[in-house]
Length: 476
Image (cartoon, rainbow, N blue to C red; front, side):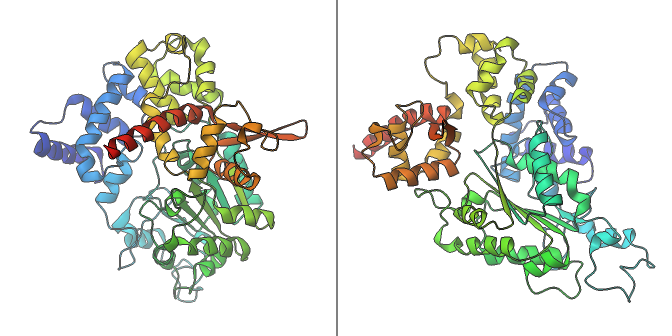
């Protein structure tokens, strides 16, 4: 599909077949706006100046209608990429046709023709005398596959983090970077924005999702097919491509390779070889960079950092004052109370979007009314998101969190309430919870104390009740 008119025609046909009803005007406005990268607030303003909450509700219904065709994970941010992906060849087909072009990434089957058009017969790359392994960016744009990447919509200011990553990649030439943090915190969007700023520096850029937990050999094959499109003859290993050209590889949702019910960063049996792959990337000399995006910090990364290998880690936290933009988009009132709300939910963009919808629904957008007389942090529709993290905890971590919730912060060398755990157990649990971003270490007066994420503190109490209820039902 090349334009929005084709998308609207396709969507109307699909919805008509499914519901017997044509595409509604507001649905058409949503599709047009999302396709062009607009935020819901802008779409609402352009569509009869209606409420943002109304547009969001209609959008949710629209995505439900299209999920059978585009997948259960369909959202605003990935709608366009999913539609484009559905209507072109796979990223690495047997014929070797791959996605390309720095300014028109999602071209698909047009790859071969585009390269021919962009390179004149007299160019060095097309000359018989040119080196077969010459780097693509010497005379052309880098080759890019962002099929699995999110769109650039709804990106909030992360200037400090972007500058840090640019320093690591472009100046320090760090080979392996891990960005970890809670789900929905903005890891993928941060990296997507980073690509826009540094893409001219690379020969190849590829983004792969690990949601389907591919084996390492499968992932390597996909990467080699992508790199081999302009390397003649093909090179034997991934590291050879990393040495020969400057490549940027982003591997998203790394946590899917880890075991649930165990301490953080432990691989599923069939994926243990990934750990060795990270070590090869960090220890071997080459000019490329790999970025890992994960809910959890892999164990190998801490070891590599300790050995002073070419690796860095960024624990992505919530937004600060920039989070006010989220509340503004929702049209919330009582702006003097916004900092309190942002602090309560730690500037987490996804959490704030969900809570803002609740405030609109139940309190007519009044932040003051929502915050009044709150005895504990309201969880509401955050529950499924938080439970997805709690479900991954080991039994030891769950017990520690349950005991931990009685304290504001804990010095693990002194807390008498935690004496039921052996020191080695407690140290291991705290380290694992830290690698998940559920506890934070604060050092004052030369001593370290650990703070449990307050939202998870509240959620863990609800979670215990939920698990107890489920167990009782099972036993009946």
